Image 1 (cartoon, rainbow, N blue to C red):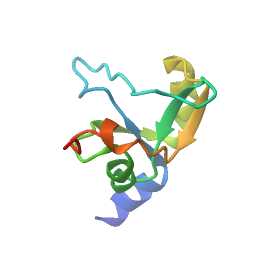
Image 2 (tube, rainbow, N blue to C red):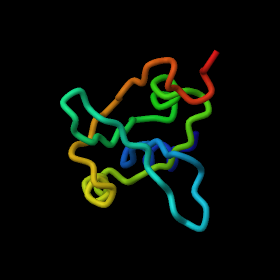
Image 3 (tube, one colour):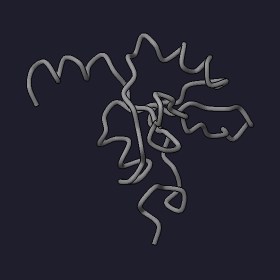
Image 4 (cartoon, helix red, strand yellow):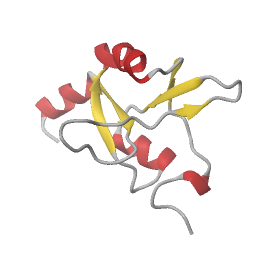
Length: 95
């Protein structure tokens, strides 16, 4: 990874998607919290996303200063860093 790529990653988070975007339209994968709120999961790195969501999880990078705007646009009630999915819900990790 180059120094420029490292600097870019410091200002971004990784957001899981339902599928890879087509026609410039991405659909974020939201989850319900235990109290019923709609949560937008975010991860510091792709490695964190893979560990929590599975190796085949589609994703996109989002600037950290745009996360609140994304949460509003998706209808999320809260942003949850590092949300770990149960193994049976992970993409590409199903037995």
